[in-house]
Picture 1 (cartoon, helix red, strand yellow):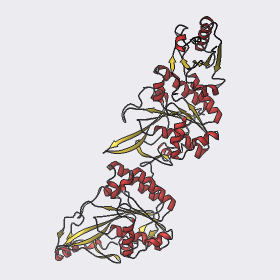
Picture 2: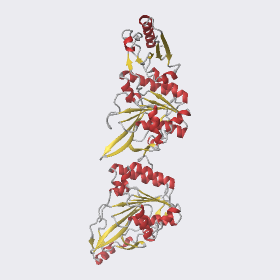
Picture 3: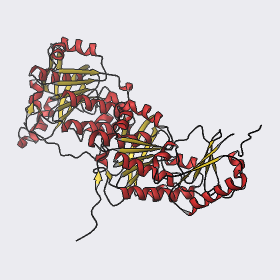
Picture 4: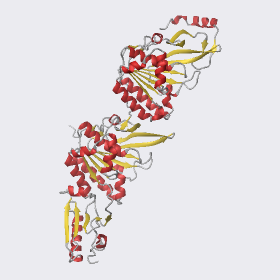
Length: 95
Length: 507
């Protein structure tokens, strides 16, 4: 089964950070039930090397690492609606 | 006691820039470097870091929004900057914010540039940087559409950099050479210091200039100065009017190589002086220059000739004809002859290569034959700046400089060269054709000899196989300098002479 790997880059715990995290949680818990899903949160203030390697410019930035193709979304993600489509999720596992 | 300290500056190490900046960039601040496409902004930014590493052992961080680090490493090698090696040594770090081809970005909701700031901070700490370059502002705006956001984030970054104590350069595009400083309206309020690079077209010739528009709270030279970008060095600013007239002048005389001319000059040329020899084509300027150099070399001095009119072979052959063995002088390492076409390079580059030759060869005598040949490859303004830059440089080197200048007309006349240079030269020798009862003769006069008495007469001279021979003064003819000759009867001259008898002889 295709595993979903998401990386969220944040810069400290700001309202935007909290908003992005809660939106993502909501997405995973409500709309991606049954898909193995891994969410890694990287704080660029404590781990700037990661931000450098991934060329992160803005925070928050969400990267869908897997399944390919990779997708990047900048911003606090607004709301969960339309976010799946933006990420090309869920993966079409059976197709 | 006052708690505010004066603004300190750090020398950038960019040749000439620190001079026009009265010391360098204001320490701990961000200086905006604005220019149109192709105005050498990126080179300037990279050089700010490279010079810091090479000359001051200061590490730097380069934040690139436009070119990839790979492209920058490759493009800067030509200036002698081995960025990859500096990266390995921990002296240079890139923060790569250049567009990544493989990843498209979508925007959803609110964001800031916290990651960028974190990366800059991290890179600065990692290499212990004191210098930062951001290149370029325009590329940030193409990557992020929200200009309001960029404005506030830029301010946050600039403030953070100030807190870190780094001195930074931020490049920005402008659409026109004159007018607004930048396109985005953020430039001026983000930084206190603005430098403008221009790449102008004047009379179909490219000319680069640099201007420090403002350094808040500290001084700098006003106006724009030419600069050039040369392989192996990068940006070289030519600080013309910044040159102070504080050359040491000495009373030591240098022989011109011709006793008659020495006598006319009151005992020879002064060391540390510039002599301008002006005359129509064929009046013997090159011979005078050749004699001047050869006599120096014969005394064991080092002499340098820049020839822009004649080829090497021609010069050597003519010198041999007058009894000077240039080849032996050159073999002995006493002489260097550099011939090139004025058209081969721009005047700014020419000036820099002339300076380099003088610095490396360390001659006691320098001749340029002819200065006016360089006139045609440049604009008036460019030429004037070249002449001023060159003369002041030569005077600082404590050498005697002899420049020839060809007048555009055969009789009388003056040239642009003279108009620009006459006030900064110490001596002017005029060589003119004189029409005397259907015959072309040659006349010479010392028009000016700073700090010395000199012969005021216009003397006839002849050129033969042994060189220049100066004879008697022209007594029966006037208007030689203007080319409008009038002949006067000898009796009239005597009468006029008696009128002023009391003045006595001038040396």
